[in-house]
Length: 171
Image 1 (cartoon, rainbow, N blue to C red):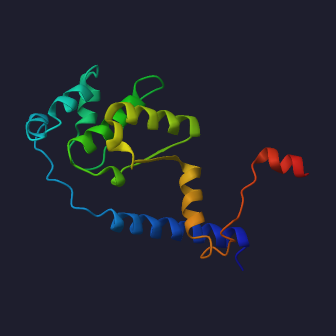
Image 2 (cartoon, rainbow, N blue to C red; image 1 turned 180 degrees about the horizontal axis):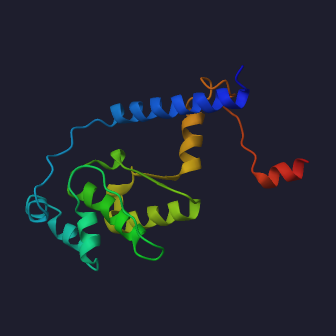
């Protein structure tokens, strides 16, 4: 017989898949046709001047990452190499060029500090256009999904999570 932790873990995985599908369905606005080149994207967009600004100060590999066409993109780089700058400009590029709406973007990072840094950078790059971008931590996204589906997981919707300090204080 599966333990409560195993059942909860399995339920969490099911909820993650269900939530991903539900969010995709809610956000399924057909994206604008992907431009065939940077110049096409810029000339066809009323925000063309702003698109050019998003590329300022980037080296060639960073520009390629920011303007990457359709499909997945993997960025591997060391500390201090400009990953956050590239990722935030990529999100701003996709939104400003009309390829996706802000509500279709999800940026996940490891720490709340890094998530806030990304939110701040996005706001500085594209202002109100980025308000609907979800920028969170892995734990934050998991918590949000579990909270939205707490009853399905057999949890009280008002459940709390104790961090290490709280657990030590209660001991």
